[in-house]
Image 1 (cartoon, rainbow, N blue to C red):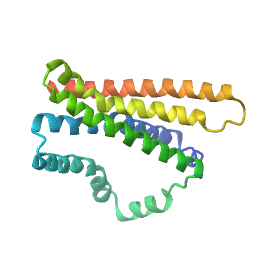
Image 2 (image 1 turned 30 degrees about the vertical axis):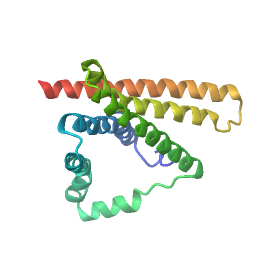
Image 3 (image 1 turned 90 degrees about the vertical axis):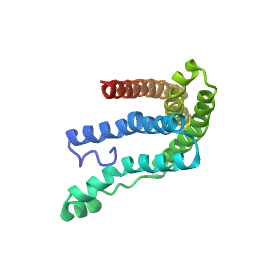
Length: 190
């Protein structure tokens, strides 16, 4: 969005930013938590995991289906032509670091949550679902450190300031994502 900021209206930028942040801090942590909960409450046998994974992937595919069905052919062609985004080397590196941080944190968090929840105590079971969500907080914190450790032309103080601001943003977005998840759970129980 930074690269195309002058081509996108402020309202469009806000909507795209909101969708991106909702995806990162609400949808993806909820998806990883859903995978954990399905294993814990529906069974961890191969068939259950397979079918539950297919169900989750179908839910994730709904936006692609809506794009394919609801947009006209001419609108899809326009989006594919004008909607391409070119990224630079630094952005590519940042995306790769983000991917590594998230994959590594989830590889640790999800099996750990299953192991903790399998111990059977109610206190652990009630808090095990938070581990996959915490993985996104950890990955965001790692990204903040990497961003601050990148060469900063001005000074090291600016790198520390950037890291602190990014940490604050990560914590705030994570808390908002948790609040959104909690609100959705409470609404589903009503």
